Length: 479
Image 1 (cartoon, rainbow, N blue to C red):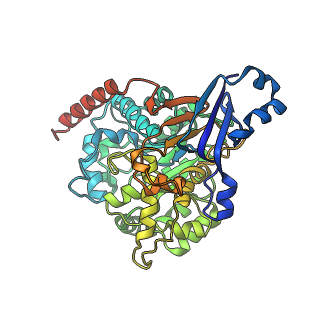
Image 2 (tube, one colour):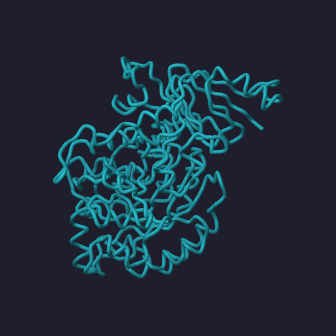
Image 3 (spheres, rainbow, N blue to C red):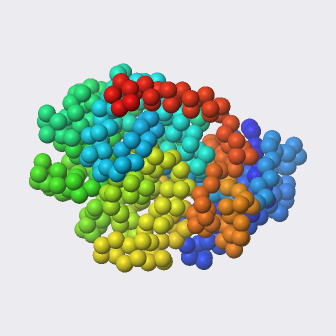
């Protein structure tokens, strides 16, 4: 049994659950330490109590010592960040649509033909790039939404990448079946037949899905959106997912005003009512974006325990709007945080995304005045940790308590960007410029140490990725 002790942490945050003085004092340990055994948290407490605690409870461990000891003086340590929505393949097409300023539907129509030229190797390499970048930003768990499979691509391609990076992975087998010829948004050539989609969902679940505690790999079922799949596929997806334990359901919903108009014209209902009519509700369901729900629809989310993934940067770059996260949280909706696709965000920085969530809720929007006290730094961290864990139906991540997964990250606070932030170093993670992790431990394995990414050398992967991106865009006639 391998063991690790991280000690002398300036502030060790066991749970980012709130912002009241009582919650802060109970979850933040000054000069803290965390001990792990194999892939679980063994103990969390003040560094000064380490020797006595283990002498009394684990004399065997006290006698031989820990296999590895890391001194984290000058750091804040928090639970690993949870990214609830992504499209990893989109690292191949960063900035193409966002630089000039496109809204969602125009952006998608422009990019679909480019993505149609993607090869399996590009899916694999782009996932390695996106996941590595996420890990360096503090992310330890990632849910990805891969919804098109051109030229023989499979969900297996990104799963292989995740296993090489070492991240805890929730890939969702996405799909598109409603092409332009049937009134949908995507071109027919990037859509698949619904029998083939269901067959491959079953294959992915039965090949890869692990519902056990501390699982590193769980499959979800994820028809892409109301404008790219049929009602029949939405219903079949619900029926399929609920035949297996802890297989979640995921889709985009209520992202833009264009989507509102599409659903009203195509189905005679707003997006939320349309989803409800198809059985898309419950604790196994989570929706990406939810920028435009009204108050009654937010009540419905809370009543049905349906989850939401907030994607602030993507919503800003594509001018989709500002999601009413404050109202959702006040009504006890399960809300997590997502970076979203690397072509609608162009970055994979999970701590930076938490910062964006903090800022965006404060600036105000129609019907809500700007208020600096609308959202605190610790509430934003809660979205990115425990909030994401709840959205993914996991009680073994997002909190650093004995028995939970050994997933945590540490950021240096004695560097240039954080100079002068000693009064509240936890809040400074978000109010100051977001930085890269100094230490990342995922499932008990040290993945980043002293700021260095350990699983593999990044530069050759970057070079291969850029070559594949260039070749794909040349085939599409963009370059």
